[in-house]
Image (cartoon, rainbow, N blue to C red; front, side):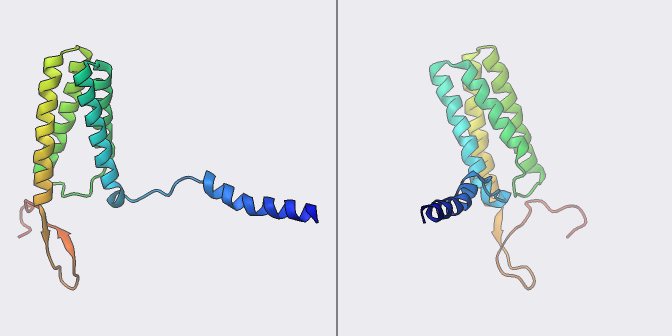
Length: 154
């Protein structure tokens, strides 16, 4: 009887252990977009903390991580020339932050960080304002309409 109880306990705990050890479910980019943006924001806050403490390795690390997130993410947004400009400029400023932190140029890092923050606000304004409600033929819902139409498509 005791053997059956132990066997039953083991057999019921195996599926629970497998669920616990299993890899987490990977979310499509559309659902994880907010997670990526929050991750970039958190790295930006690390840069700000590094600025306040004059912790140049923390500034460089935060800048590098923000750039890596930006490069790795395929954002579900209109990939028009304006958005591409914001994206390229953000990565350029991350590189500049990293270089200035290595030089321990506190004033340069501060100025670049402020410029980057302004760029982020402008990009978010642009992306938010580029969304329009549309009703495509036969479908209802929200559709992303590009800010610029490719030549010959009108």
